[in-house]
Length: 273
Image (cartoon, rainbow, N blue to C red; front, side, top):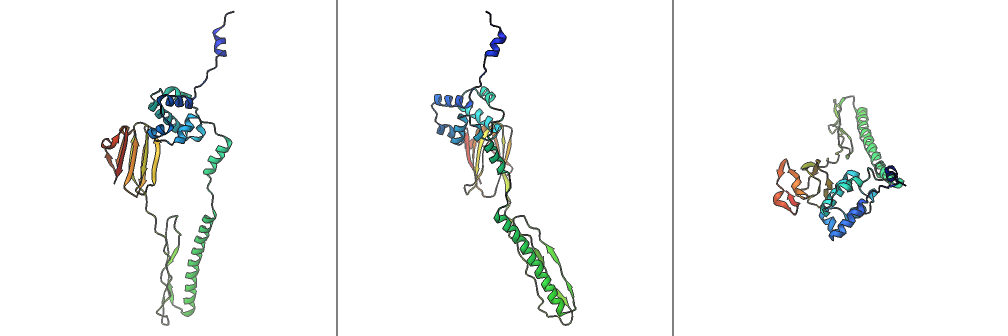
């Protein structure tokens, strides 16, 4: 009995390759450990373990995963094209994971914030009551004309908005020379503003880490080809580490920085004063 080609196609099962298993097998053939791969790609070892286990739920969004796979395949010198095709369009999230992600975006007014708002209202009420008390006290002692001026002080959200009262100066024959004066309330100084100092343009995917002089991490991420990133900070000097440095343009305070003298094995390390 002849077997028709249509029946062959119907009975053939097309099976997708496992991206994680393929990468893990290639890594083991190359004799590399997870620590070796983490050092070369500048990724956390837990991220590499999640990728090799096809655990996309514990990885960032798919554009990040595609860049991750592309760099991993390049390190292992294997073709990345079939791996990128095998990636899911959108990794399946469990109900619990979705609830956790949504809950992170829901603002919650804690006890401390509620007390802060109460203090703001109380402070404003005290200032108004103080001004009215001075006005009534002086009005009972003389028929003089009073000149008052109220100035509204605009402050950032982090400070308490208050009303400042100027000196009340009575005019008349029986006015005490030591007129009462309202004490202005001084708000906290506005915090220093962050300034954009470092700008990077990426011709290809590249990992970048930027830290200030106190060791605070201002940026640590994989950046996709064709993207641009700005880093803000005030505590210079800044320590910069750039993977795939030959495909990255770095600008500091508006001036381009040549990464060639600072590069070794494709990784640039430098300090920006």
